[in-house]
Image (cartoon, rainbow, N blue to C red; front, side, top):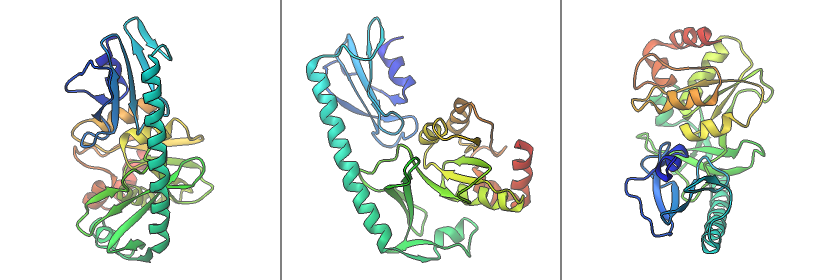
Length: 273
């Protein structure tokens, strides 16, 4: 396996490979519009990091994948990069907690657009705020804000890896994993219609869904987005869990819900169980 294949297997998109032994930020499969990955490569050895899906750096050299044996300077660079990322994460978590504490419950145009006119969310400066919590500790790590027009933004510097927003009962029979908030609301409505005491974990991205799915226990189901890139299905299959998605390309669970009504969504969910 060459270095480009190794990087791709870890989700990095490298359009131009630099062999100067310096860090370069690149896009990732789960976040193609952002530079959420990084690599360094000197022609013989390399290191990669996908900030959304990897806890640690992964190293490579010509004779195969290794855990160490990178140069002392590269190791120092890795540690420095990790410290800087941790600092940004901590700072963003504080800002997110402050914003969430300042928000008020209310309706929002985005919720109406997505078919939930009676739903209430945390509103600040006319934006809907969705808390992002560590899947294990439940601590606030970041937030996602959604404008009235549906534009979504994450807290700059916030940690997305392992971040979720839980919907449904605290004690659940099954856990359903989804990417987006509106998708989660639709799946939760379907579960209520089936009188199921299941929970929904909003994971905010396909890559993070896979990361979380591998770490939460119990009975799990993935409701994948049927995106045109095929990422949703690839990630669902990679989890090794039972999964389902809308039969229509370009639809997620909320799109299906709005197109067919609640019972169309429920029918698909029942087939998967």
